[in-house]
Image (tube, rainbow over all chains, first blue to last red; front, side, top):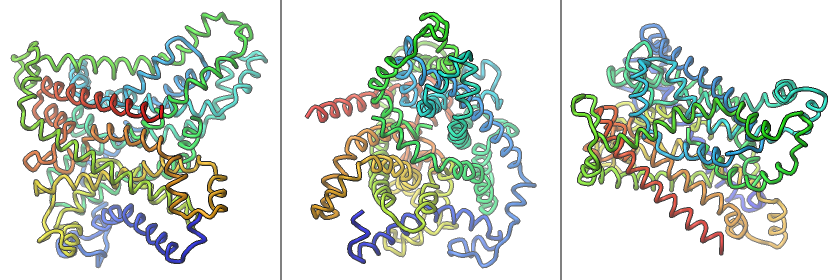
Length: 279
Length: 327
C-alpha cells in the first residue's frame, strides 16, 4: 500500500507499531515463563526485575510429581478430546445436511442455533446443575463432555457447513449416478476432501473445551475429577504464595492450546475470508 | 465459545440468495431413487438428529426451565423453602442495590473493553494488510493471546498487577499514575481496569482477524485507482477503507458487545467481583449467586433480566442498522 513508498518517518513509525503490538501480545506470556523458571528463594528479591539471575526447572518437576496436576491434566485432556471428537462427528453430519439438503424447517433450525449462541450461557447453569445432580452425574467427566458438546455444536456445524460448501456437488452426484448411496458417496468421496476442515473443527472445539471454567466449577467438586482450570484455581486459592509452582502449572496449561493454535492458525484468516466474501 | 458469532451472522445474511440457488441446482429426485418425501422430510434429519437432540436437551430445555426458576424460590441451602413465588424474585431484584451497581459496571466494562479492542484491532488489521519482513511469524505471534485459555489470561494478568511478583504497579508508579506500587485490583475506583486490560489483551486478535478478512475482500483496483489519482494515505483510508468496512464493523461491534457483556470468566477469576462489588458485572453476579450462594431462583431472575436487556439492545441496534441501510 501507500505507506511503503512514502516517508522514512512513516516506515519507522510502522515498525515501531509492530514492535508495540508484539510486546503487548508476548510480554504477559514471557512473564509467566520467567517466574516459573525463577528459583523459589529469588522470587521475592527479584520478583519484578526483567531477567532472573538464575534459572531452575524445579518448579516444573514439583508441579508434575508432587501435586495433583498430572491428574487434572489427564482429566482435561479426556474432556477436551472427547468433546472435540464427539462435536466434530455430530457437527459434520449436521453441517452436511445444511450444505446439501433443502428441507422443512431449515431456516428455523439455523435461527435456533444462532439464538443459542447469543443468550447468556450462565442462564442455564442452575438448571443444568439440577438436571445433572438428579441424574447422579455430578463429578463425572462424561457429563462435562455432553454439556460442552452441546455448547460447541452450533458453531462447529456452521464451520463444517462452510467446508462442505467448498466441495463441488458434482463429485458426489457423479458417484451416486454410478450406484453409490448418498452415505457411501459421503464416506468415499466427500470425507477425504474435508479432512482439513475436520482437523480445524477439532482444533477449535478442543481449545474451547480446554479453557471452559465456570460450568466445570459448578459441576465438579471432587479433587480426582477436576479439570485443569478448576484444579489450578483451587490450587491458587489454597497455596496463594507458591508463585513459582502456580506459574509453572500455568505454562503447562498453555502447551496444548499453543500446539492446536499453531495447527489451526493458517485457517483463521483464510476461513474467515471465505465466510465474509460470500455475502 | 462465542468467539465466532459474527461470522455466523454474516453467513446467515448471505443465506437467502445461496439457498434459492441451491434449490434450482438440486438434481432430479428420481436419480437417487427416493421419493420427494424421503429427500425433504427424512434423509436430512438422519444427519441432523444427534445435533438437534443435544441442542434441545442441553440448551433449549434448560433455558425454559431456567426461565421458570425465576418465578420460584429454589435455594439449595434451604431445601424446605421451595415453591412458586410469582414475581417476588423480580421485586427483590428491583430494590437490590448490588444489581444496579452491577448493571452500571457492565456498561463501563463493555464500553471500555470494546472501544480498546476495536481501535487496537483495527490498527493491527491495517498493519497486517501491508507487506513487511517476517509477516507470517509476526501474525502468528500477535494472534497468540487469542489461543490462551481464558482462566490463564485472567491469572497471568492478576499476577502482573500484583506488586510482589508483577512489574505493572512499579511501572505505573514510575509513570506517575500511581502514588506508590499497590495492587489496583484492591482499589474500588480502579479495580475494574484490571479485568478490562486482560480482556483487551485477549480480544484484540479477534477484531484483527475479522477486520483483516474484511480488508482483504476490498477490491485492489480501488486502491490502485486512488493512488494513480494521487490520493493521500489518509484520503484512501477515510474514503475507501472505512466505508467498505463499515457494515462489517457495525455487526461485529454489536455481536461482541453482547458477548462481552455475558463474559464473566475474567472478572470471576481476577477479582471475584470485589472489592465491595466494585467489579461485579451482571453475568458474574449470576454466577456468584448460583455457585456461592446456591440461590438458583434469584440467579435465574437476574439472568432473565440480563436476557431482557440484551434483547432490547439487539432490537435497537438492528432497527438502527435497517434505517442506515435504507438510506
